[in-house]
Length: 373
Image (cartoon, rainbow, N blue to C red):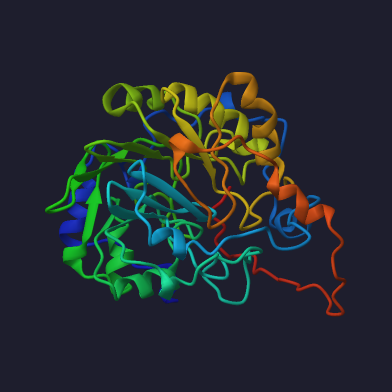
C-alpha cells in the first residue's frame, strides 16, 4: 500500500542513526514519557471506542467557512497573516512569502480510502486552486499530518519541503524530488535560498509511525518560522514538555503561536496537549497571539468536537491570553485579531435537514495501525 510510505535507508538512515535522539531502533523523546501528565485511572480507548464511543463527536452540519482566495490577492498590511484551512493546515504569509503547514486535503486520515477517520469539514479551497507556495512544512508522519494524495499533488509544484528526520523517505517515494526535501534534526535550521526566511526544527513530545512495525522510525518536531520581522511557532503534535521554555529562550519571542488543542484524552496526557495544557505551553513559550489548531476537521478522540475551543474560550481570558480563532478560510493578521466570538456554536444550534440515507458504517480490521493513541 503506497500510502504507508517507505522506510529510510542508505545515507538517509545513517544520518538518522547519528542523531542524539536515536535510540536502538528508533527515535525517543528527550524526557521519557512519564505518568505525570496522564490519568492512569483512565484506560486507553479501544478501536470500538473510536468508532462508537463519545457524544457529539461531529457537528450537526458544516462549519461556516470563507473562500480565502480574494484575501490572498492582497498583501498583508502587517507582514504576517494566517489562514486556517482545517486541522493543522495553515497558510502563513510572512513578509511576502507563503508557508503551508501539515497540508491535508485527503478525505480520510488513514492508509485506506475506504475506512478510517473521515473528514467532516471540507477544506475551504481546492488544492489545485492554492496560490504559489514557497515552502511546505511537515512536522511528522502521522496520517492527519502527512497525507499521501496531498503530497502527490504538491510534488508536481517542485516546492521545497522541510520536515523531520526520516520523513523525507515517504516524500521521495511519493514523487517529491530529492533536491526539494530538507530533513532536520532538532535545533537544525533550513534557510530558503534568496529569501529572508528560515525554519528550525525544535523539540516536541510525541511519537511517529504509519504502520504496525515502524513505531518511532522517523522523528517528530515542532517548528519555528522566522523572517527579518516576524517569528511563528508551530507545535505539530506534542504533549506538554519543559522544552518549550528552552525554545522560548533560544528562539522567542513569537508573534504567533499555533498549538494543537484537539484529539486529546486523559490517558494521552504526555503526547497531546488539549486546551488546558496548550495554555500552559503558551506560557512556557513566552506568550504571543495564540491560534489553536488540530480541531474542527476530523474526529480523532472521544471528546465533543467543540470541547477544545469551548474550554479555551472559558480559560484564556482569565489568563490574559490573546486568542486568534478565525473561521475556516478567514485570513487574519494576529496583531489585528478581533475579540473571539463563538462562531462555531451556530452549526449545532440551527435546524438540520434529516438525511434519508443511513449513516455510514466503518469496519476497521483489528490489525489496522492507529497512530493517535
